[in-house]
Length: 625
Image 1 (spheres, rainbow, N blue to C red):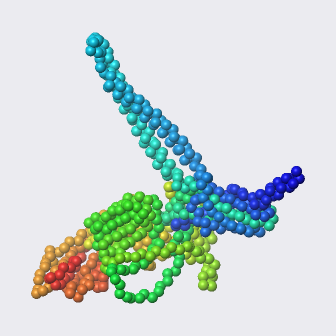
Image 2: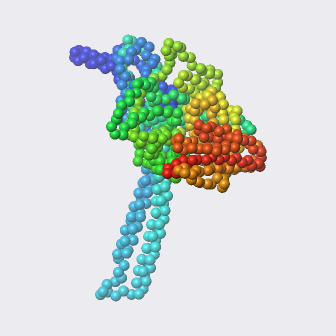
């Protein structure tokens, strides 16, 4: 008996020494990157002396195992850390989702009952139709009996049809309600994330101890993208910019009452330095060319975009018809029309690919509802090999090449929403004052992280050869201090919604120019001069004279400043000559052929500009004039 008792005690001690504990944990802080997020969890662990295994369960299935970090260990040491999917544990629905699920079951039961009623009515209707014989060949039937039976058939048939109609109406209403509930469940639910992840941490404790552990890890299917509201009351007042972060997450785990930090960093960016080696020339066989894609991480995927429109042009701004626009990862695609315009409904992809014969393929993230592209000419028409390298992100901290790197951190209160703004070497972090609950669903949480006025140089712009509209632009100086990102913006001018535009602060210029939309009060017209519509032949040469007149009418009640641009072709062949250039006082660039006029036009005044040129080339050839 004593032997059994001793064995039992030894067995119990062994179990206690390697205790497997499911430890409750809570999300305390979330750092949200442009793509992905870092979760900081806290957990209280009561350790016994020896080996302990702690299990953090009911976690996201999207955890990057290599990113898991544990702190707050005191004297304990980590023996192992493992992440796995627990397929037996499923995500618990929220109260709102559970309520919708119950309502869906109730509505489906009602619809099924109504379907059964209609089935019964149709069976009765069929029975009446098949049993309308009155009497028999041997038994006569009276007229009164015929009237009685006819009246019954008529009344019952009418009642059946009325019941079928009213019941069908109820079914249609229920079907609509069922569809609405299902759509709301799709928005609130996260069905692809039903599997739950768990982190197993094996610790060795020299003594009994109580620890407050901090566990950090990265998750995918989350992020934020910038969006701007640009408002201007008039061209005499500063431009107001509201800088907003649109946060999304479908990690499978709700972030409840968590501290939020927004970071402009992207841990998915390829951080491997390129290695430029010697390029050797040699003969090749067949059509072969090797290109390397130059990655541009300025624009980030926007999951709210459902339809994209735009115009595809070449590098000269000429529209390209028939460009193939494809949503990568799907069979969804379209072609540009004669004016280079396209529209494509988004079906879940993250990138658009643009391809056209004679031009290099371009692939960019779906970042805006309006995406205009300039394709680069690929004159060789040869095979293209794309090399894409993926790497892991490593954060910069402490020192670089032995030189200490200091963060510029604003300790003061940044604004009413952001507690502090920290500007590092590679990213900016906005620490939000208020705690947020961000559920794992298709909703977007909008956080305004900045709001500021900027002194603006308003300028009208027109290029009537490409577009006979006048655009109001705002030239912003010293914009770098606001750490803006490339993104879509809604424009409000003089109290009215003027449309959408895109902000691209990655442009390597001292100022940032934003298009505020078309001003219909300024009219521009470009027309060819009749006395220049001439063609002639001299010897073996063909001569074409072209001349144009541009007129601008200011229908506003104030003076405007406008930049007017047009162009004269540039010859790339010595057999094509351009002579007799008249640029009418414009600032002419003889390398690009661009003419620019900077004009001041008074209210209700009209201004005209003319230019002309002559083209001479061999009459046996054709040119792209």
